Image (cartoon, rainbow, N blue to C red; front, top):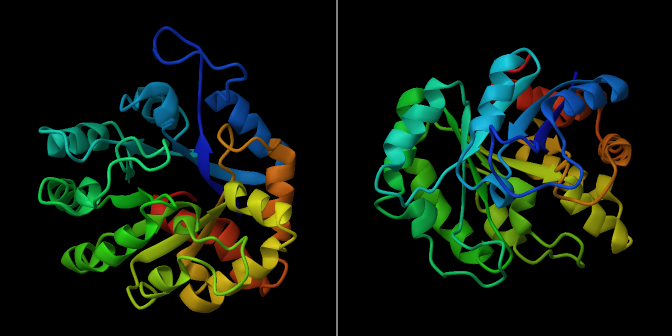
Length: 276
């Protein structure tokens, strides 16, 4: 069972106001692509660059297709009503919350770790823990080292809350070993609720650098175990066609046992997000 754990949905519809998208990946189009390429389900991840913190389209899509889609919402953990926002999206069916640094898409945004580890942000973690949600962090290269150093304290405070680090936490596996950022990531290997997601964003950079994605996936699984590594396409964000995303994802587990490959390509996501 293959599951795309990182699919950004977009739609040009006045019911979901946002930036105009040239080639939208609607829920229906994604489901057709899943069927075409042999995938069972996907995690619909809010495209914050298009819709900001209005997660309506991903939660509505998941509600229409509960057997195929799970909704991951992007929220501002520093907002005064952040804990109420978590409750509101969870009530509409969201299974995960995703945090990222303010202005993070602009290289060298505001420094610091308050966006996920400060006193205000911890309200979000407490609410997620109470509701049984998972947390997802989008860490960039420019804030990676500080964030990975601050993460263990937060993780230990909420031991029952799964944490997923997007895009290998921006560890630069496209550069020679020891990969920049690897020390901070591997320091989390003993914290069992920490998971690592590898996406086409990583694979495309690896291929451009002449590195086999299968080597990096094997490296991750050897450190974290296959039950804590998962794959996602990053469709609509990374400029690669969906057929190639799926092909590269399958090729990336070539060095694993069949059981471990099945976990990375679907089993881990099924457990985390309640997809069957």
